[in-house]
Image 1 (cartoon, rainbow, N blue to C red):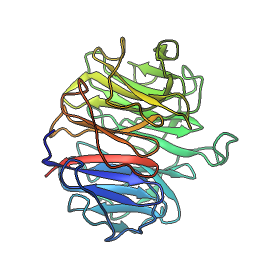
Image 2 (cartoon, rainbow, N blue to C red; image 1 turned 90 degrees about the vertical axis):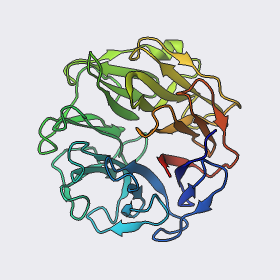
Image 3 (cartoon, one colour; image 1 turned 135 degrees about the horizontal axis):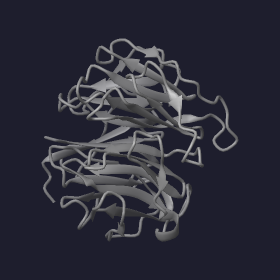
Image 4 (tube, rainbow, N blue to C red; image 1 turned 135 degrees about the vertical axis):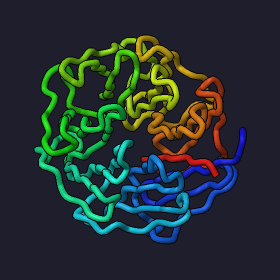
Length: 323
């Protein structure tokens, strides 16, 4: 596999790790981050190709050198876990962040200043004790439409860039939301995952249809979604046998979620597949991780995969970028 790209891995308890050569060698990033940080989210800037935002257990961080060092951004999130970060692709100065305890924040100046958005979210939940924002997505064609998913408190939607929010109350019976993503296709869709189902809407969330994957996936526990950056009909979903499971798999659809195929991996994952990293610099290159520290990479959009040699502690976030 071509090694002219870098991979950033966000772990639980050992900070950020960086590989400058596609996974051959690694070093822990120590400049600007605690070595024992919990990193929940990594998000690439849409236009500044070396800029990465990281969500940690003590707020939000920014790197302008491809993940070699980070700087903490002072914000109202300093005492919160930042789980998700999303940019407005048409105006990257607008950045959204989701936290635990569950709340949403927005910056309109590239992260220099932040304020909390007026959205009602549950303060406690028997399933996870403290609800957290596990999904954030800005519609690339209609950036005033913003989606947020909460574990465990359902889907929220804003149609005015985050000024006001509504809760999706119909069509998604399970409030345990794991991911939300948009796909700009002929039938413009938004997808969300719950533990045993993927739901799709083609009318901006007015109605939803379950895809029935719990009946068809060999490993039906669903986590993250990814869309191939040059082909919105090609979707990937990370699956496994349970939240703290013993194995995982990657499912791919080439027709917008109507049909799925479990992809061949070079080794049986040690736990559910958890997250993906994509980049429009090379739409065919995708990096995936298992919950408990394994990394898999493809250079042909999932037709074949390589297991990277290094393994880590629990992984929550991934990003890759060209060198």
